[in-house]
Structure formats: structure tokens, C-alpha cells
Image (cartoon, rainbow, N blue to C red):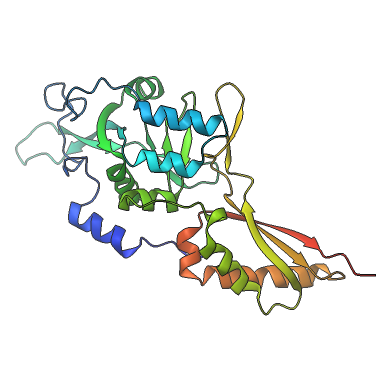
Length: 287
């Protein structure tokens, strides 16, 4: 796929906010980490627990009554906690100073997904954050602001409650929709994605049919071992391609390469799809 650049509206929002900021539009950098200099969070009367409606939306997903799109939609209304840690660096000494001074800045913690992409961890409650990183300070942000911060940090994913009873991965297209407070439609249910796939194969004579379904990486595992349809980090979109029979390996590779090239050149497709896999099948000859 081609390089994924920030959509103009996300870039404009970041420029307006000055980069990675909290819910009050204050930058992380330069914060005082002392207990008197930085409150735990900025939301009055907040006990640090998970939002009840968010919990209920997860329960509906786990019971098969909800979707991952419902979870992302609910996140748009939720307060999240971003883990912040101190970065201590030596300041340049003055000419007559015998020792270096130390200064402390704040920095957001980041993760690496199994595929190597950068991810921003966020938490629905303080307890999970403290168990995950005891030295991190929880700073509260509304979820759309956290999504903008992820974009500012060049994070392709937001990971909600890593290490908790239920970890939910918010992919790049979902995070961008969250930042705009727009309803997100998963790529495997998006008509625009289906149309883009059809355009990519419409004049390829070796292809008899092509469609999309949910990818193998959509599912996620709960702490108790159950698997649910949503929140997983792997391929979200599967393109099912049916080829004419009798093609050799070189011909198959040529068809797949051409299709991938066309999709990578389709900016709408690139914006709407986080990751994909291709499943090939040969059509059954008619007798």
C-alpha cells in the first residue's frame, strides 16, 4: 500500500491544536511531574472508573449483540486516560556552572504492534493503567482528542486497555473518524471499499469475481479465553478473488500485483482500509 498521509482535516486539527495536547489543548511537553504540578486528571468528580456505557457496549459486543463499530461510536463520548512518563535530560550547563542541570519533560508512552506499527495505549480506567505501568501518570482526555494525539505521534493504532480484561484496538481509519466524531463503518462493511475492489479488477480477464469480507485479524481474545468479533490487531479486510482455472504461479502473481497496485493508487481505498489479506480461489469449470 502507498504511504498513508494524514487527511487534510486531521492535519488542520493538529495544526490548530499545536500538536499533541490534552483535553484542555495544553501540550504534554514541559509539564511539571511533581505531585503539586500536575493533577491526575482534569475531569471533576471523576472516580477514575470505566465509563458504564462503554462497559455495556463491550458486553453487547461480547454477547454477539453489538459490533466493533458500536464500540468505536461509544468511545466518542468517553473520557480516556493517556499514560505519561517523565523524560529526564541533561540541560546544557552555563559557562561558570560546575554541574549539569537536569530538566524533566512529559512524554506519551507508545507501543509496537506485532506488525511493527506504532500504537498509542489509552485506558478506560486508572486501575488498569497503574497495573500496566506503575510509573506512568494518568492524564484524562476525551477520546477524540486522544485520537488526534495518536495522529500527532504518528501512531497507526490506539490500543484501549492493553493488558486488561479486554483490550480493544482502534485502527487508523476508526481513529481518524473518532477524531472527527464521525460514525465509522468497518472496511469490510463499507460499500465504497467494495466498489473500489470491483474497479480494481473490472478489466482483469483472469478474475471472474471479487468481494470483501472481514479479515482474519478482526477477532480479539478476552482475558477468559473467549473470542469476540471486533477489536483485533490483525488484517481487518479480506479480499476474496476468484480466478479462471489453469493459471500458473507467474500469472497468478501478476494478477495479484496489478490488483494491489490499483488499490494502492486509490486514495479513498487507502484512507478507508487499515490492513488487508487476499484469498484466492479458482473457479470451477462448467461441464
